[in-house]
Image (cartoon, rainbow, N blue to C red; front, side, top):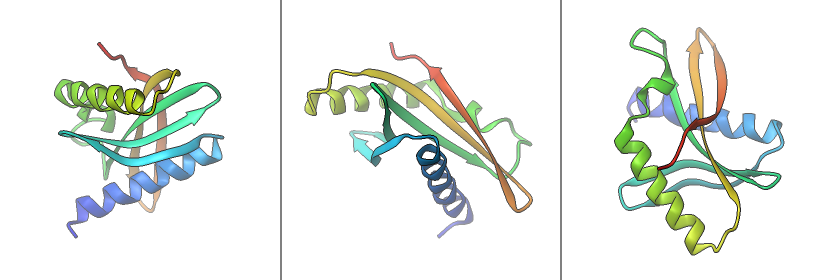
Length: 119
């Protein structure tokens, strides 16, 4: 497996662990619909949190959250709309980003709630 793929998998697991530690219930991982993949679908109280995980080995080319592009957001929104419809959910949906940067042998985790809005 390519090194960046391994870093991405490690980042997703760190994000799941972080969310569980912060009292989120993990509902789905890597939910796919059409061209979109939702990294994590979690809930906390009455909120369905849609979480995009971005992991980088450094910030030389920008912060991890800067790599969530408008087309990806559009695809995520479609996927989540399908998920909510198929599962007949009546919940508030929030789109978050968990940005992770490797710092030597440790990882810095930042949870950006309401990171973007659906249109």
